[in-house]
Length: 78
Image (cartoon, rainbow, N blue to C red; front, side):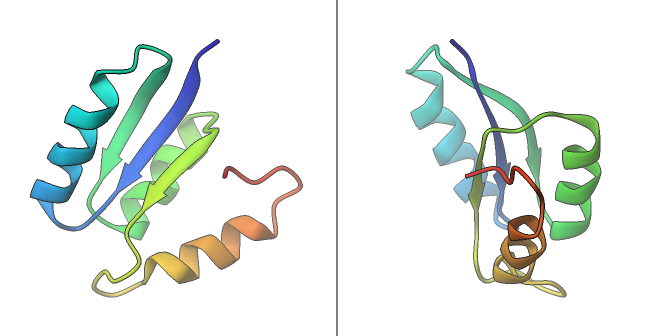
């Protein structure tokens, strides 16, 4: 079983570290890595995501705002 994931962090090093950590686990499939909420919303429109690794403090729109938006979906990602 694959777990479709999305990494959202405005800091490249954060994305790289999480990508490296997840690559050791074959069940975790990284569908996209995003540097903003706007790019995450594009990726979410294109992919069925099970889990989002979401940075909270980001410029323009915070990760918490995206989490609030996703919570309104019938089946939000974790």
